[in-house]
Image: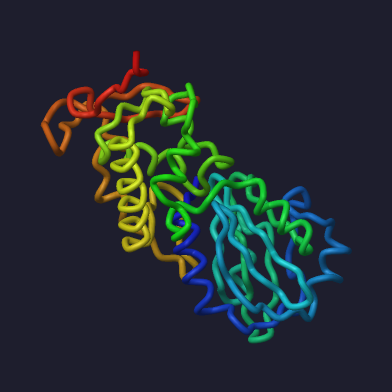
Length: 278
C-alpha cells in the first residue's frame, strides 16, 4: 500500500498537471463501490469545479475544489492516478475517470478495486483530519510529541508506528526502515523507550521518509506517480523484504517475524529490545 512518501510524490506530480484545471464531469465509473457519494450526486457536485490545490493528509491524496469541496482519494493496495489522454480510460483496470477542461482525463487505475474516492464537504474533511495523528514531517512533530504519543503504551513499537491515529502516514515499509535506523527492536513496547531512544526514532522516521520522497517513493508492484513513473526507494532498503540477507551495518542475517499481521524485518544483532524499567 502506498505510504506517506508515495502519496506525497503523487500529490506533487499531479499538482504540476492539475492545478487550476476545471473538472468537466465524470467520464467513467464501472466500480460504483469506490465512490462516495453515488455517481448522480457526485457528478452534479464536481462538474465545473476548479482544482485549487493538491495535497496530502496521512495516506490520503487531497484535491481541493472551489466551493468548499475536497476530493479525498485513497490508493489502497494497487491504485494509481494518472493524467492522460482520453483513450487511456479504456484500459481494463481503470474504474474511475474525470474529464478535464484541457481535453485530458484524471484516471484511477486500480487492479484490485480497493481504492476509494470520497467527495467531502468542510465537515467531512475535518472528520478525516481528526481521525489521524500528527504528520511526522511537520514542524509541530517533535521528540516530545512522539514521547507523549508513546507514553505507557505496551503494544510493540512496530504496531504503534502503523497506527494512523497515533502518527499519520507511516506504513509497513518505512516502519521497518525507521526502526532499523534507530537500532530499536520492533517488539519493544512503545512505552519502554527512554528519551534517547525516542530521539533516535524521531530522527530515523524523518530521515527515512525524507529520503523516500527524494527518491519518488518505492515501486514494488503497482505504484507510479502522476506521470506513470516508478520510484527508486526500493533500491535503498536496509531491511525491508531482505530476510536472510546480511544487515548493512553488522552483516548479521536479517530476520522476518509477523507483528500486527504484517511482515516485519529486523537485525537481531544491532536492533535493541528495550525492556520496561524495573
